[in-house]
Amino acid sequence: MNTNTSVIRLKSSLQESIAELLNGQIGMEARSSFSYLGMSSWCYTQGLNGSGDFFKKQSGEERGHMLRIFDYMVDAGAQPLVPEIKKVDQHYEGLRDVLVKALEQEIAITHSFNNIVDNCHKIKDYVTIKFLQWFLEEQLEEEQQARRCVELFDLIGTEDGGLFRIDKEIIRLKAEDMTKHVPKTM
Ligand code: FEO
Image (cartoon, rainbow, N blue to C red; front, top):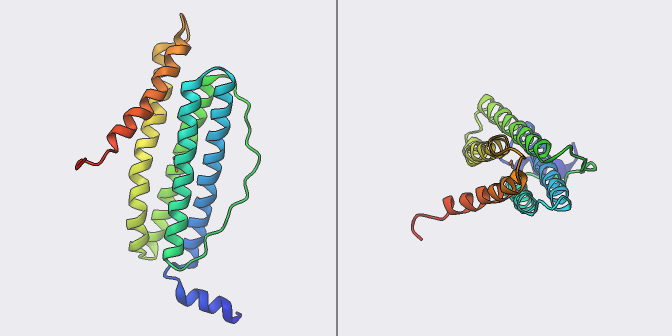
């Protein structure tokens, strides 16, 4: 072990196994951000501007999640790693395919957070568990929103200009989400 490594270990309150998992999560959030940007781009090219805006906002939120973990690791004296991002597949069979893939992505992220929390419990890392609480609640909302998008698609259907209506409803979900997050004191 060289001197630098031992200094870093002494400074960090995070165990290496948890730091590794958090770095993995940084990668997952970054990929999610890029994947949503790809979905946004696909939607815009189809004239689905509401959905394009929805996924662009979602992409920004995922980047925010990545930075939240980044900051926590820095605060804990660990080193966050900048992830390598694979090329994003931007081919979709249609808007429903995009929406289903977005939902699957959110479910995978929830599983990943649950796995980190499980591991924190094993080593009694209560501070990280507390930090991750925000993400678990956020995931509940994001999964619910993604599921609602698929539901709206199936309920409205694509007949008689349905796609146009679906597109309008999808961006409305994001607007409702913003209102929900206005602090009560305002
Ligand atoms: Fe950052 Fe939607 O998970």
